[in-house]
Image 1 (spheres, rainbow, N blue to C red):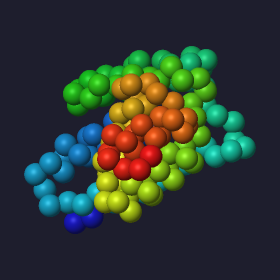
Image 2 (image 1 turned 135 degrees about the vertical axis):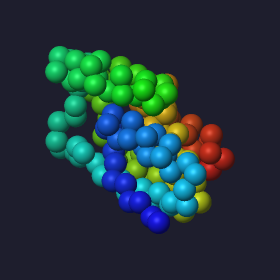
Image 3 (image 1 turned 45 degrees about the horizontal axis):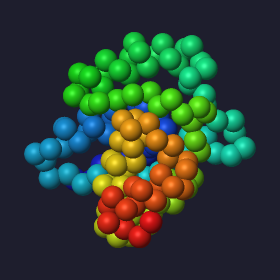
Image 4 (image 1 turned 120 degrees about the horizontal axis):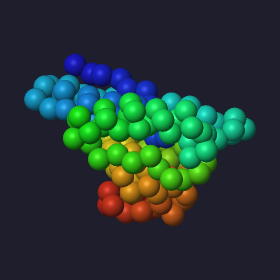
Length: 136
């Protein structure tokens, strides 16, 4: 069976959902087919959750407990505003051609939500590629 997932790296629900789905698929013969879906592209304004009380409250009351219940370490990235993900998705396609697409997806999410690094920064994207053994 193949499961198609449409996701953006700056979507916190997508991050938690990927881990939940990965746990559910652990002992099954299932292939995950990842598709980038950029929630906000230039010139749409970037999201700035650090200055949005509703988003901060939703993170604390909904996302953080959900992540903790799954055993997922998750922080709301202090990057303000959150980056566009066009370049990060270009990196995904490069990694996918090298057979490391899903590894790239998981690492990029972790870099953003655990290490709180700016995945819109080419230096950070190069670090991700280097960690995967790809030409950054």
